[in-house]
Image (tube, rainbow, N blue to C red; front, side, top):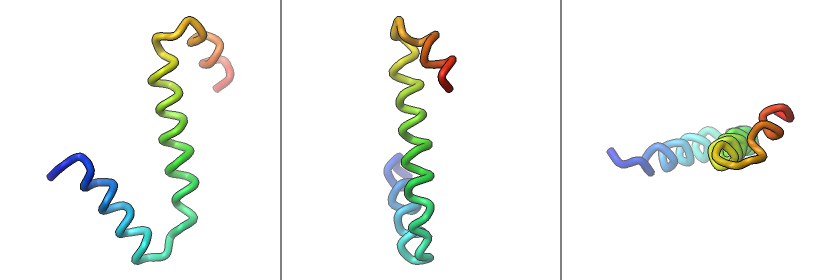
Length: 52
């Protein structure tokens, strides 16, 4: 099982079940996670955590 199979399974699930409303929710969760990961080593980290 590869790491990308999770994304392909999710895509197949949403396509078959017509759950397109999940896409914005998933994208926002991924975007928030990326912001937190990349801002962790930044000098702006204390300010970003106060916003969230």
